Image (cartoon, rainbow, N blue to C red):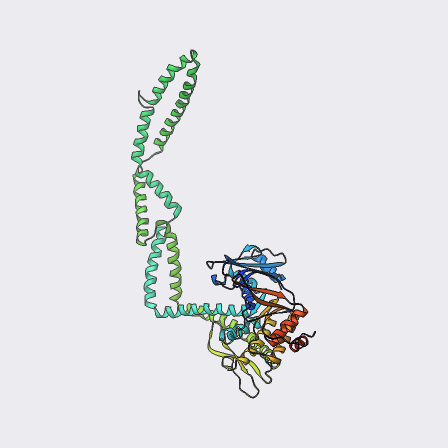
Length: 548
């Protein structure tokens, strides 16, 4: 259930901290006082989209934080998504003046998708015009599937339909483009054989290039090594001989002056280094071969690779990926060239779709009967005696991603009248009552522990309003129910009540929330009954409604 809600700088709310109770709670107040603003703020915490218009004038950012108790299912989801799961779930949303939004779950950054996924475990919000959505065919189908717990099956059916359609389109395209496909296949076959014959290997390509560079410059390398040896060791003026002369001159003199020891030692080290360099150059010259035949072979190999890469407008290193793409496309064309194989794959996909779609249809038929009976019973309670509700499953000539049938809600508000599609119900009052019955029943079937009704009682009053209040009170025994309402008959049934009012001062208007005790509830319900002037009669009526 919802424990706490914190709102700052949101629309006309400057700062608000609310603690919620279990059971059925009513939020009342004058029109425009900000009752629905609380619901809007909670919707943002649950993942609805927002823009900068929600920021209160003068504020730098709007912030909403909602704390819920975490069920075992939600705790498992939190752990699976790397969020802290310590028995509570804190959703936080911040919207800045530029309309940018940040979200967090239990202190860790989260996406809006993750907020909405968490919201599935936390709360259902029914808006004051939610029944209008029920006029759409897709909303009716989705509600039926949710009611029957068939969402996963519906998703799987849609995926199988798309897979079938892809194969069907491939078969039709293959049949339509036989000549073009044959030409493409012939070209690809030649290209694949060419690339396979090249036997290109990225590591080998690097080695070939290194060896080619060495052999291409072998003569210069031999000449350079020889010239260096001549300077170092192969002449009377060689560096080794000159260094030996210098050492011969210095060694006897060290007996007379120890200061000569350091430069002599350095020259001795240089003589050793020079010997090592000479021996290394001799070994290098012995190993170095001109190998003209090998150089010719490498040049031919490099030219062949670069020519193929240039023809396909890729770098040589990309040739293996190109070959893989050609081979994959060739495999597709081979399959397309075999109509029987392609048709068999298409038929298998169609069979998988039909199997899932028929299972979905069976689930829908069972759910449709239960939902029709439940909504019909609800209509009797809502002063629509003799009214009837049915869910029609109208078969389709060919299935769609949504299944093998259209889902149509049918209703008649009066006995003896024929059933008509819900979309054609003329009376707004009838539509609101039917929609309310459907929403309450759908909420009972759902798993969300907190249910929020935002002025869903629009268009009703009197005895029907009292019945709606009782329905919500009964629902509040099992769930936490919050209801924004203008009807005293509904508010009087609540277990607890808040009053929302505007407070103007210092050139600003802000929304305030007040928890009502027994006496305050009498005054508020009396206001809802009597309007501007509250009399002793309206107070007595309010006490009677509240059972005080």
